[in-house]
Image 1 (cartoon, rainbow, N blue to C red):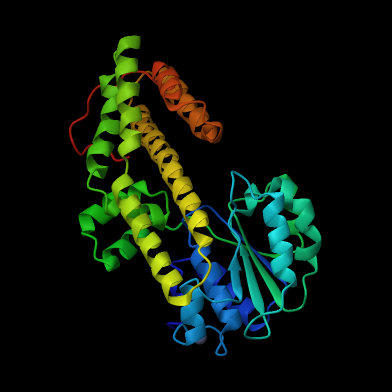
Image 2 (tube, helix red, strand yellow):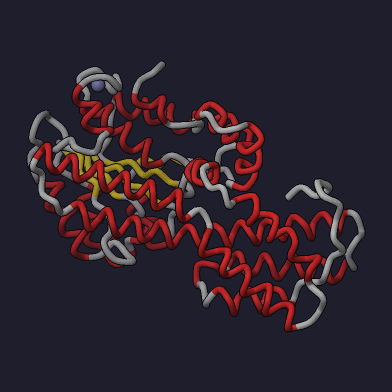
Length: 357
Ligand SMILES: [Zn+2]
């Protein structure tokens, strides 16, 4: 079936819910899952299905405009600062009250609702009981305690990480070399957006090799730790930046083309550049997370193969897990990596190809 929902990769259960939702919609949907699991694509598909006279055919003018992000009855309210604030809550309320331009219905998409903290109370009432013409599609990475109440007013649909095999198969279908697809699929953590980015990043293999070399280069001295930490921090700054910035440039060009053609207000520019800045920042965190996972895999292998003192190996894994869990409160990468590397025991270098992180 090649309707609007066929663009959502994997997520069969979520898509089945969304199809049902499109046939008999309620006032609000909450799409929950990690970034890169297709929620934005799914939100656009649901919006198209709700507005399309044929329920989301994927071919008509309505479907095409919704997926291109230019339909007047689909509004996406992006956060403007670090959090979704009171100003955006006000904007959301205003948009929710507006009469649709073209048909009987309009759709309000709110991404990153897990960053709404302060705006939540201001939105509770309108999400709970919007005008009959309004459908909310709310996206969140997770449901934090402050979101529980508002979440209970929505139909929740969960998105999970994709199986690595599916990520690899999708990349190969995109035309990526199978060997590259297998490597980056493994490193993607089940996130198709990240896998696609890494697949177009010629520096990926070298970065992976550097992370993999760390345990065998440790020698118990602070001097080596300082050298390694500096090297890794430098690496974070180069990760997949070129493919991401070229994608950003394409998005900016597409937006300017749209503005020129439709004469729409240029206010989308700031939202777009803000999102690009956030994506670049997230790239660093993703890369660091990937590096930590690579190290953890090496220590797990070493423990299984008894190549490291059990207590030291387990302590190293604990240290890695602690850092990974606290990445969100990032205290500065250099200090973080130095402190981490001091807690990791050295490992003997392994023959090439015998470890599989
Ligand atoms: Zn259609």
